[in-house]
Length: 123
Image (cartoon, rainbow, N blue to C red; front, side, top):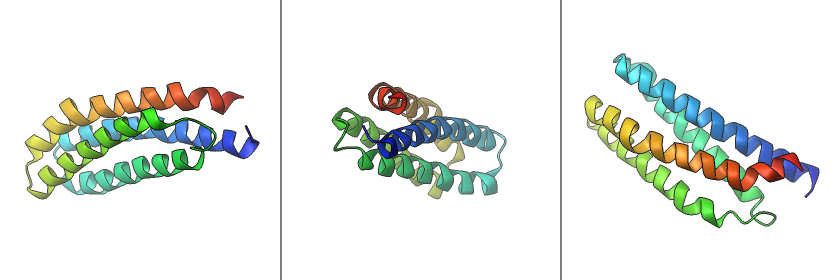
């Protein structure tokens, strides 16, 4: 594996970890009823997820990432649920979706990312 690909793998792992951290912060902000900050954080978390997937696409020729696709789709669906509930100003529903749907999906996706891409980040 080329050095550049290894660096991409390291970046994917970093983004996956940050995504999980930012999602926890978003959940806290919503719990504190800080809706203005939460709106920007939702956008930031979604962008972080998209960035991670764009980086993953860069190494698809080197690494079999097919197992990540279904996990990524589940996370994307969770984000769709959050955005829809947020647009309907249903903060309680957003909190519920984040806690019971999105956080577990992101955790599973992050673990798969570490399983699939992690070994290549260290070679």
